[in-house]
Length: 342
Image 1: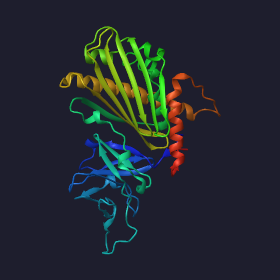
Image 2: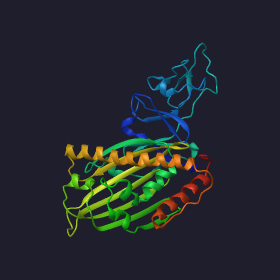
Image 3: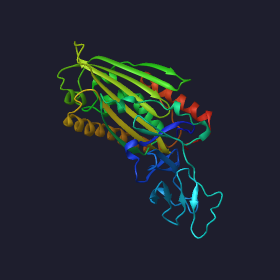
Image 4: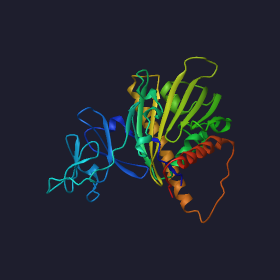
């Protein structure tokens, strides 16, 4: 299992998910409850266990900007301090839950579950296309019952599109085209490019753009370890310089606990902005593609767990980006206070 790098920012939710209702998530093995404060509209993240008998606060109720435990009434303010207990006026000094640093940026709610003194909001990676008024975005989230490193591998080696996603986003040229890889291990960034200058147009693009015939298809990946993955996609009809159709594919890869990961996905486009039929198609079509990955990774995880003994992986050129990401994740985990996903 891939180790967790705790002193890092991770996506806990989409901003639209965090509101008046209490939202429970597990981040790096830590149960978390999220909600939006009425006082200033900010997202709040607290440990999702009452100190009294460990009842989930996400299954409790709000009292203004405080949470009252649904079991015995212990009440916590937005800093995690307990402000009221049943049957007595004195609140025990140790009655508090952790409050996690939160940054809301580019329609994503980022959380820091490591050492709070090390949380630096300037280190949150950007995905500005998610809030760009010149683009339309569809999005979703799927939990996967697999090690989060398997999802990183999956996204950094897009040759699997040809085989797993044939008839959706995959064509023969994806697997056949060599990649170029750039790695900045100090910055924790991996870049993988695959430029297909004469390729079949898959249904994902043919039906959303109206292109008929072959296309120039440029895929440029940026992976900001450990959480954010951006795929910058550009397509245009072969032999033409315009129109250029731009699609930004975003994944936030957030480990929930050992063997389970949240797969936040979004597709942003700069064409057919007000076309609801295109929007619905891309939402449904990409959800199908995501679920193909979910099913494959769930299956892969079960296969790995059933291996009768040690095994040796075989890696080839297409794995260069994924192998670099593995090294970076291991270094991030080793650099701070980590919990092995073992």
